[in-house]
Figure 1: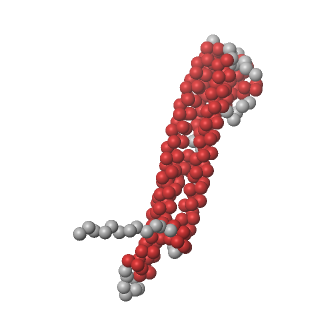
Figure 2: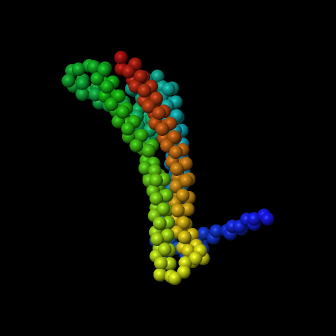
Length: 231
């Protein structure tokens, strides 16, 4: 005889949420807020990285069109919001600062001026790398913390269910099912927050590393041009 397959009922999340205890509801609401914040951060960060890359490429192209870098107008050094412009500004300012100090001491060393420019480049790279990576720690915290927060809510809910039925003479599936389903709601909420966040984090991390590598290549080319001009 064929075995009839059980019919699965639909899950009403609002009903499950309504029968949860205060701790479960607080954790679920907290995870919902984390989810909204995480999506907001991911969209804003992706848009920011895309915009910065376009600005970097445009500024790099402008420098390529210039015959010299050391004598460009001051307007090229005031665009600190553009990472490549910030690197250029630190390099040129460090170069001329070193040249002024060495001139006062009666020393004319192109190598020393270039070393100061390279130090300025490295400082700017470190500063802009931190800018690229801003908000990434927050996303990483949500990715790693949301499942554990959901698990805590589930363990707490299951513990509350068994504590409630401990004093009853009989405990059947009908008495346990509502409490267990409400306890599992926090785990579901934690996974709903963590799964999109981990994909978004990995995409943003890849974009950040790409921009950092491109900036290293730009800085190397900038140092080469400054070295040729300083001779």
